[in-house]
Every structure is written in structure tokens, then in C-alpha cells.
Length: 509
Image: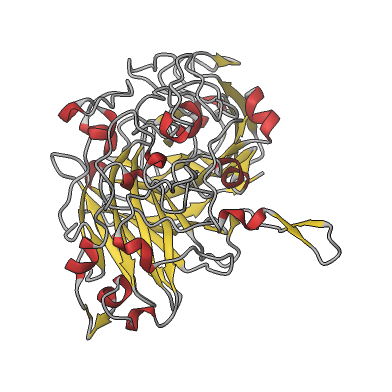
């Protein structure tokens, strides 16, 4: 792979250090990993939805004595294009909460929280299609459809951009000072917001964002690519010992009594530098989970993917009309767009030329390469006439009495072929809802439908467990795919007080 590098004092912590004997010694930089403490520097909330009466609530806690600058980014389900992002400044031991519900224009965020954000007022803000369409002359269409529905479900990432150490909140005229709560209210959120305004010149298309703020020797410095807001001076890079964020997500279906909740996927040792960026275009497109070694790079993608790569995932399934029990799975590939987005010339694309030495790639083969995935987004037509990026998977279905059946999909055919009335669909998007049978819990508009009942023996109980294996050659060679997954189980008995929901994390192999 060929990546552009952004060298900073933090990123250089892995450089050769001379020992007293004169022999070079490599400093060991911890790799990103799933946090054993369930607190960390990067959070992935694997699903949000506002479909069919569902609302999603997000809660994040700063468990540390440090002030944090945190990037919050909502990504739509098909190709992980941004639909909403903002910054939260969390003072020591602060917490933030928000709820996302449906509106005619897409997901709408509401928050009663007092924590400072940039922009200043995010209460009532609605997601935007600009990153995956050509509206407002954005030239960002990725071929996946312009519909509002596309952003009514997806996933959320939260990233620690910078840390201000204990006591910083007492230094006047700084972001930590303005964000500090006094009697339950921050001192001055308007000043916090102004501190995230870029001081760089206006960005011009086809200009490398890293070309801004170069030093006289024409070498990239730690400010390059950030827009250099005032807030950047008030934070420093996290260290491996910084694992401050804890996140939870809850899904509630209004009027039915159904609901469930789960912890966010938590990554430790994600960040290596000060990532505080201006909350203005295009600077607010950074950082991402792929840029852990520097802004406007994707050099950190492999290390991040190593932390969440698995060859298979397993959980329960149910489709029992008599008991009202139903299970959906959500399978999310949070780094897939860095491999499959074809539109390298668009700054909104995850793997755009602006993260790849500003080189236009015309052969549909942008770095870091399609592997471990199979298809570029839109390289073949989806079954509904819209574009997708299907993944070859093998389903193994078990009922509760040890009966089993194996079905493999490749996005266009099914082998071995099940009966004609059995639907087995592949995983097509970044965020996939797997619906078992004709009914669904989350009511996704474009689910992946599988039907174990039609495959297993007629005597089988309509419930059991299943395994999804990633069997394409690219995935097998890589040891699997970077994936997060969970199941939601609901029982709808016809009376609100008798309904319930339960979220269950998948297991992995």
C-alpha cells in the first residue's frame, strides 16, 4: 500500500531511538485494540435507526479528570458517507446525551444537554444528503441513490480529538475554562464554538488540505490539515493511558413498548496526535478511524482493522409467529468504505485522493485496495436497481434440536439453491440489517432477508442459532473482515405491556 505520511512529534514516537550503547532501539507504539475496560479513545455505535417509529438515544461519558474534544459523526448505511457531524467539548467527568428521531428530511437530533458543542446549537439539527448527492453543487454523488431514506439508519463514531490535562479548566480564556460547568452550566459555550473557527485560507478544490500551514522548509507540521483553529492550542495528543470515553446506545419503538440497549464498541490506543480540527468544511471531515497516525491520511486503517477483524460471527435467530418472537441482526463494516468507495476524486469519499497524495485514480483502484472486500461500491447493480457492494457469506442455520443447513451467497446467485420460496440475500452495504423471514424488528427499508424456516426440516422449531462466515478469497486471505455485530430480539404479544426487546452482542471466530 502507498499512503501519504504526516510526521508529528507524536507520530514519531515509533522512530528509532539510540540506546546508551549506540545501537538503535525501536520504541513500541501500542496498536489499537478492543478495550478490556469498555472505555477508550474511539467509540463505534454500531447502529442508529429512525425507521418505522424507532428512535435512537446516545449517551457518552467522560470518565477521566481531563477535558476532551470529541468528534461525533453519523454515517449513512450504504456507503458510510457523512450525514451529520459536530464536536463536543466534555469537561472532566462530564456526560452528553442525544436522541435521534425521524423527520421528513431524515434523522433529526435533539439534546437537552448543556455540554458545549461546535456548532453552538445542535438541538433540532437534521441530517444532510450533501455528502452522497449533487445537491447544492456538491458533486458528491456516489451512485447509491439520492433518497432521504438512505440516511434513516446507519452508525455513529465518536473520536477523542484532543486531551487537556487536569487543571486546564482553571486557565482563563481557554476552551477547557469556557467549557467547565459552574452550577450545572458551562461558563461560555459561545466562546468554545468560536475557538473551532479555521484560521487558514479558504480551501480550494483539488488542493491538498495538508498543503496548508507548511513551514518554510516545505515540511508538513502538526498543524497541517486542521484548519488551525484556536482550540487546537488548548489540547494535546492522547497517550496510551488515556481511555476516557464510555458509550451506550438505546433503541426504542414509540407506542409499542419494545426497546433494547447496548454498549458502544470501544477502541483503546487509537490516537497518536492532536486531532483538533476546525468545525468548517473541509476540515471537519477529519479525523476518521483511518487517520490515527495523522490528518488526511488512511495510514492507520490496517491497525484499526486488525482490532475488529473476524472470520465469522454468531448469534440467535427466531421467527416464531405463535410466540411473537423475532430476531434481527445488525452487521456493520465500519471501515468498508475505505476500500470500496470508487469516487476517489470526491473529498467526501472515505478514500479520496486528498487522503492519497492528492492523486486522481482513474482505474477504479484507489488505495488501500479493495481487499479484504470484493466489489467496489456500485461496480455491479444491486437487486433493487441501486448500487451496493455485496459480500460473499456462508450462512449456517441451526434449529434448537441440532438440525442444520449451510447456504452460501455471492450477491447474484445462491448455491446450493434453496426452495424457490426461500429468500437468502447477501450483505450489501456498510450497515446491514439481517431479517430472519418475512417479519422484522427494526423494519429496515433494505434488509438482507434470510429464511432458516424454509431451509431447515419441517419439524424444526422456528428458532435457533446461526453463523455467518466471510468466505470470499480476499477475506479468507486476510483472516476475515473488520466487523461489528449484534442481535435484537423482540416479542410482540399484541399488548404493549407484554412486549419487550433485548440486545445481544454477537460472538466472533
